[in-house]
Image 1 (spheres, rainbow, N blue to C red):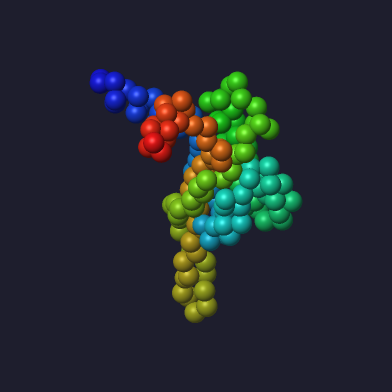
Image 2 (cartoon, helix red, strand yellow):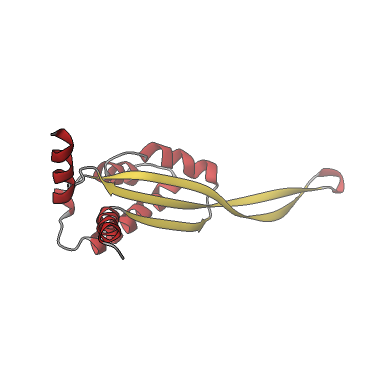
Length: 147
């Protein structure tokens, strides 16, 4: 690998070290209900989002609270020497996708049957550091551009 590719790969690796994600798969809540809570915390600081989710009465907020704690634990595993209080972590992306639906039958009048769809969802949560430290090489490149 050439030196340029190696330097670029190191920069990408360092950038990915700052962000962390967690996934919740086949959560038995409808995607519509989960998206309401996800939209509420998108872009928030992590501490503020944890507080909002903890005191929110919806059932989906408890599941997202646990998922956010998992993403924080993943971030701590990547950045062992760094304290969470010193960084400004925020929720960069949160996505809610539909998952499998369980089909059930409910009896209806006059011998008919109605279909009940018990929906579930997948949630992907990505947290990142708001303040990204520039490397020495990037500051040197910026100094050259200004000259």
